[in-house]
Figure (tube, rainbow, N blue to C red):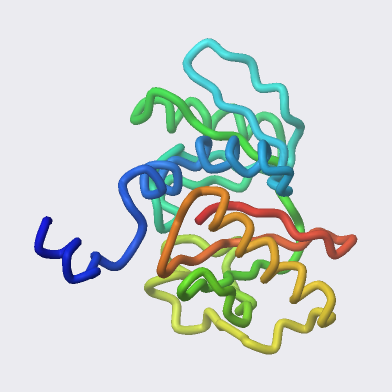
Length: 187
């Protein structure tokens, strides 16, 4: 460690604090809300808690990746079933308002936002199969959105990354609603 500091070298990537915040969707959302950044309305539930968000909604684990265990629920009944199912494996689950519209991902390199990519899937949503198995999923640099919306997404990605204290490289997932407002999902 001392040798690295003397040579002004460091490891690439975020430290443990930023990584912890980024891996836990709720902690990230709390930081973003405190910073005044838009993230869909949400609720954390444990066994016995009442669902207060209306459908459609998304039910997912707090700290899993690759869309494993994610359910897009069109009705309250399906949301309650998804919550019950996930609570068999997890202590708590995240329920989030469903944002209908294009999905973007914005890469960050040295804290600068790169051009967003629009994710287009033939599946119900961008789930594990769409990410890793379906060769019909598209990642498009031509997002079909106005320059103003694209620049807003890049700006939000940079602010979201900075708010969590992340450095060097990252990726922020954003949904665009029907009024073309971007919403931060996760990092």
